Image (cartoon, rainbow, N blue to C red; front, top):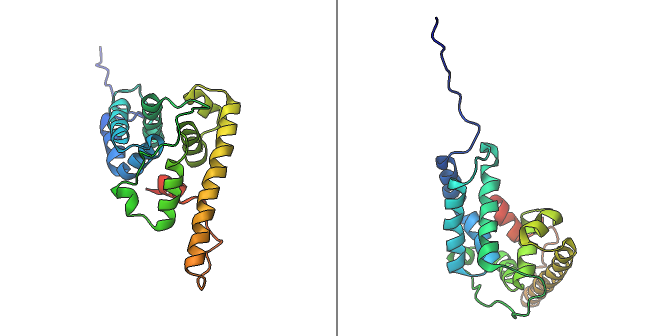
Length: 198
């Protein structure tokens, strides 16, 4: 009877080495995501480390999905750490001072990040997840354990507040430098471009 030869094919699933590589290559962007969600350096670090552990130890994920899965586990850990709820009355979060990564960014990006950090926790999560990470309203509501209408209302409030802060900053810059008008050709949010491209 002839012996059957088994050929081994590369697995289509991401290995622990693949996830470690993703976390190493995208470290700044993943940390910034953690920080924008938690508005706290210590909790952001915990979410980052827990995210790596969860990604490595989770159910198999296709290699092509490793980067998006890494971001998802960061978000899931931040949700567990903060437990943002609609209509919180906790007051503004002031623990989110800019870290060394954010201080190296241009002033306009620092303003946008500070505006995001100034949001209430629920609004901050909704803004980061739906606007910066482009989660659907339905996915966001499932991850946050709330109604879709809460997500819509929170995003509206977040956009209004961030717009007000950024507009005020632009007015202050124009008043300080009237000879150099602000560019109207901004392509998206500075925070968005950081999360997508870092």
